Image 1 (cartoon, helix red, strand yellow):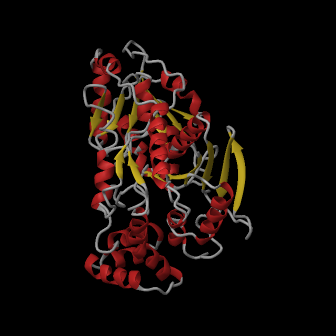
Image 2 (cartoon, helix red, strand yellow; image 1 turned 135 degrees about the vertical axis):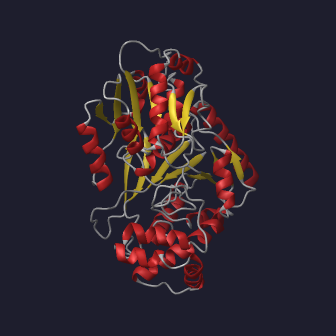
Image 3 (tube, rainbow, N blue to C red; image 1 turned 180 degrees about the vertical axis):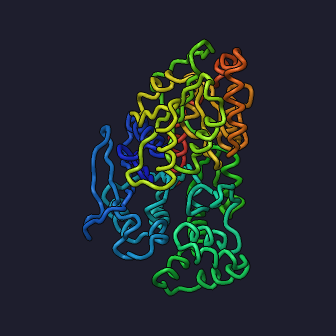
Length: 453
């Protein structure tokens, strides 16, 4: 089969969970004899030439086509909200690629920086289309379903009125944010409904607001055309259903883990410091700040070391700057930077316990599966997606999301109870392999292609 896999960002510059999953799937499908093309977006913050939209490169023998103008489409310079889900330049390039590559299947993994309307093109050509949900982009412009104060959001209400308040707080002056926040959601809902029904594309801030008003319905309408929606957990399915995504196309399919040569090593406490690992990103919803606060709550003489594995963002922010200052000021913290994905067994072998302090509902992060494959216990926020992997007191410990005191207590427990670390390590669960995961995908593809005939 000829298969297109899409994602919003891709290796080697970007190496988050979605990018790693797509790379693993592309590699496995290629090894099975399929012809695979990866179509991806780009972080287009730098100025680009008007005709500099698509380029190509080869990664591990896989052809990658990259769209470089996700937020700065030549057709809608001033509307990054619309360009993130309805980008006309991307659609044109996608159609050309369909005509050239002639895929049997298109498997979407993330529509950010592209266009949801590419589903229309596949439907018109009767190409089976799949979606793997890796975050909540389809119902949340910020992808994480988090409110500005860090609390979990249940999704859009009143025609995306709450989303409007959130976006204004993130992008506009404080006086304007305060003024908009004072308006009742019901009143803003009337405005959003009016903008949603209008067929006239408005300019400026009003146009961005209009794109937000139209976002949910535009996406939900296209999802009805998908062949199947794959989710890693029941919670992910329930969240999408609750927010207007139809239910008859779902399949729960937990992610598979690529075999990088993991060896399950049973951790044991000894006289050495407890080595804690953080493997993630400098993003607020990933919760590194919670871990840093928990570390500060531990006595300075506690035998503990924190190793932070993360890539420094190209563009700083107050959040990142503050975290870096905390890391540099604490002698117990070692900043290790990033690493090649295939070396993760070596990285995990250097730590006693992995901490995943996310404050959003994760979608079964691959690093949690990697830790289990290596016999490394996980201390994680008690949120869906993580609690699907970690059973409290069995193969790890769970703490209330955002509560540094609870996380501190979990770390203290591993130091004070000399048998706990070994007990949790022995109970690590071997995750589903990437090969089995791809076998399931291949069976889905073959069934869809057969039904098309």
